[in-house]
Length: 360
Image (tube, rainbow, N blue to C red; front, side, top):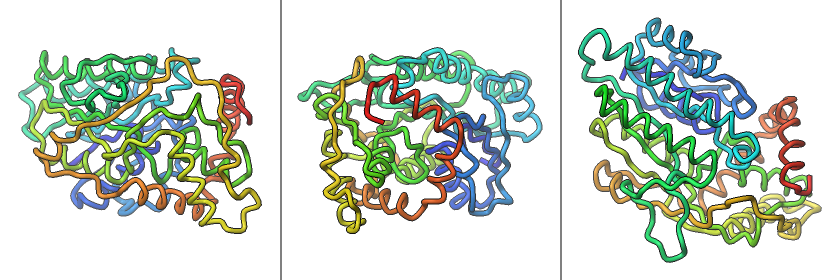
């Protein structure tokens, strides 16, 4: 692992992983390919550790000529593929973007890796294509169902989940058909620093600070597993270093709160962290809104395999992670301001609220 291509490395999880990799792998050169769409920003890459080992490349993962040239010019030996359209709500209204990026973009990267590593000579022992996926490919659980395992059948319910499931199958197919060395991880809901404010936790934090309504879908009793992003980065790093080729692992935070409980916990943290807020108690800002179409009721992750095989466990409890996340947003007003001043962010907010019929 010397020349690592990180796709989507200016996004939320990708930028956190770039930081983690630069801190923990002293000999690695990181090549960061990102199209800088609405959820990716160079703001996420400010003050990187060891910036001399980081090269930013702006471009689209669907551009085959560009991707091929990156593999050749930088002698890429490892791919960590984060780049994806990832917001379920947007996939309901704009599924074509998810099909293009998540399926065709993954295909483009696989073709480039195949050409660079397999077509002209036997693959070097150290090359690896690591694909980042989601728990949503497994569908929805009832209150009594056991957590998702790596061998749980796929049953995606949203266009987003279906596009990620398709990309997972492509990666496995290239591994089986062409012997492309790959690993795959399915993660639960990530949260933490640098998360774009479309997602539940940063949206609730920033709305509450401004006294805006906190929209909660349906009855708010949808259950999710929440994974602090730094814990996720550590798990990926362990997979890259120690996992056998062809293995897949579930990565989760080991918790199952309802969405409403998450919002209420954030309100309690903000009540204490911002005692002078005129909007206390922040819980009074909660508004229940019409549930989204096909909303999965429950996700839960069984992390026995990665725990047993690689010795990984999440280091942050949910309470610790939420507190750290709130503090980060309170301490990084400049980042929030820069993201919100972007024209594409304003357009997204207006469109999103209009489509969902919520209170802006």
